[in-house]
Image 1 (cartoon, helix red, strand yellow):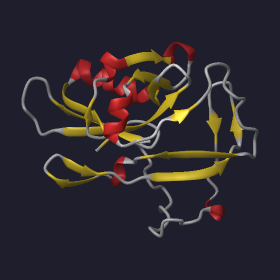
Image 2 (cartoon, helix red, strand yellow; image 1 turned 180 degrees about the horizontal axis):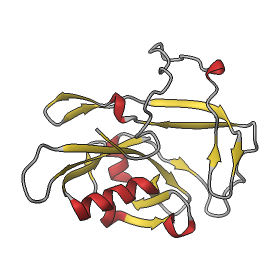
Image 3 (cartoon, helix red, strand yellow; image 1 turned 180 degrees about the vertical axis):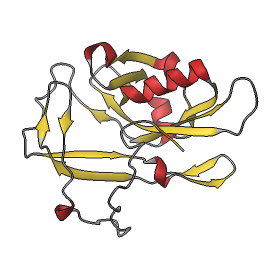
Image 4 (cartoon, one colour; image 1 turned 30 degrees about the horizontal axis):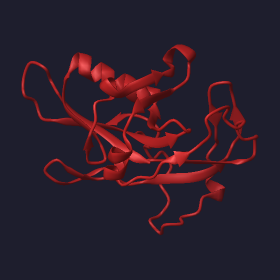
Length: 186
């Protein structure tokens, strides 16, 4: 996983920068790597480009324009995913690994009760450590699949089974996870 972040300003005047972020990961199914993010992250970026001045966008420390790199956006198929072109060199510069798959039919989704891993970078944990320099907090977990539809996997978070494996404490009830799977401004 890697964080995706962009900054915006009003178009008509130089207002202070506002930041938005989402999460991405990298796959290679036998035809070269590509980046994957939630479709609503791309939708927010495109809306910001139309309505605001986007001052910069990056994955990790690598400049990235999602509109120029878009492969597919599942909006018409009700799939909340967007895929983007990315090079092996860019992934190496970001310092991430590629998940390798197969060129063909994906395995069936997990069955109800099997464990699903999720992770991302909630904007509530983003800290500006210096001017335009940020630290991102990783939030991840493994939870059983509780339900699924043709378009999504659903997992109910049951606090009775949460374990603090990193020694940082568990998030309080109502903790804002915006930015883990998708976009959130801060």
